Amino acid sequence: MKKLIFPLIALTLVSLQSFAGSKATDRSYKYCDDMTQIDKLLDRSRESVERIQREGLNIERIVVSKDKRQLYLVSGDTLLRTYTVAFGWNFIGHKQFQGDGKTPEGIYTIDYKNPKSQFTKSLHVDYPNKADIAYAKSQGKDPGGDIMIHGLPSNPQKYERISKIHPYDWTLGCIAVTNKEIEEIYALVKERTLVEVCKISPTK
View 1 (cartoon, one colour):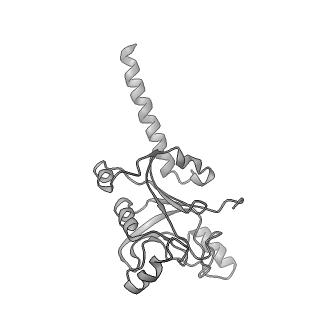
View 2 (tube, one colour):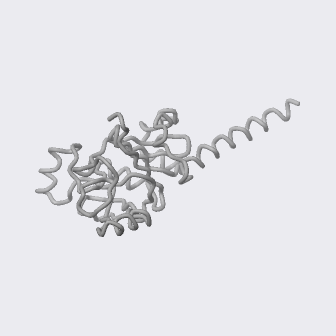
View 3 (cartoon, one colour):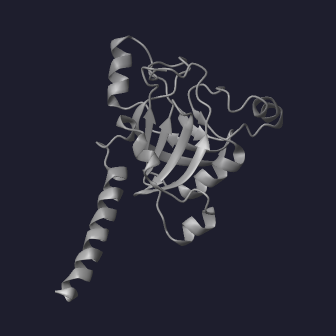
């Protein structure tokens, strides 16, 4: 009997880890439905990027809370990083049209990374999706695009100006962090990573 107990415990732990990881990679699962799930994750956010990379931990989902103004890097049942972010200048509500100043809400994907962005480095979000395009078209408008998670401007003059107001909302719809933070995010996040942006709650 004792011989069976330890293998069963090990199998249970592996199953739990697999389930936790599947939540982060499953597009149908939404942290936005209950953001307290983020608080229940194992917090390893104080560990170095180098250690995370050595252990081969993959970021499976980027979760962005408009309520908390935070960006979370999630790996399975583990929280690896938390950052304070700036949004579009008109960030309340889902982005619908070109020039509306809003940041998209919902689940998207990082479709490519740019190491030489005009905002230091950037991760491109695949907005608009088919539903976004269809809605904008029904209104006779352009859905816009070029939504990224990025750092501060590369141009010294623009950097000087924007760095004084960040993290107040200053982008055209993107999600912005500091240059030091985008370097970490860029190093840890791979293409095809899911991005979930949570809308402002009705009580806000």
